[in-house]
Length: 216
Image 1 (cartoon, rainbow, N blue to C red):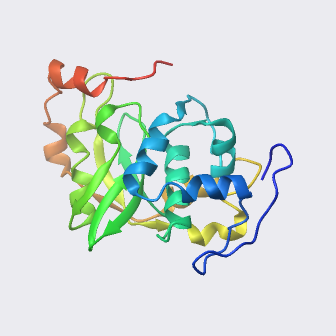
Image 2 (tube, rainbow, N blue to C red):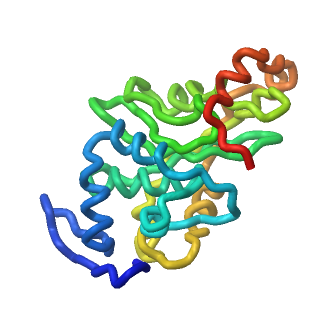
């Protein structure tokens, strides 16, 4: 953990370790007790255009991040509050991929995400399968030409697999996370023949999804 002499902690609370986070960062994340409060926190982060993969500790220090970094903070907050740190990759064509932090309540899936597009963020836990959850992003997932670009979703990736690489607290970019997401098995959402015939988004829907977008 970097920054202003932050103290590492190994405290336990409800049987959980402090995950190497500073006491201040641990308090911040544990205060986000619900997925909705985590999403609100992630939304408040300054959106940054950068080729980075900051760990949660860096994002918490600088209070900014992009899609991947917002998902990492969300996964860390979910973890310290008793959920597994799961991510799902949404794969696109002629567009950027998107990363969603996953959570499950009463057997149903929901998602937390940071995005420059209004419709690619929070999902309440109402989806029976990850395919249903991924499909909920389809109509909101488009590029600046108005093309619907979402094509596939990954199986859940448990970031606990990367604990030895300090994905929560490393001082450097944690490129191990996107590498793991890319390597995960992906499942097609749309048959190729259907994808080639998709119409472009209408202007009204396009503008609605761009509401609040931070320009480069």
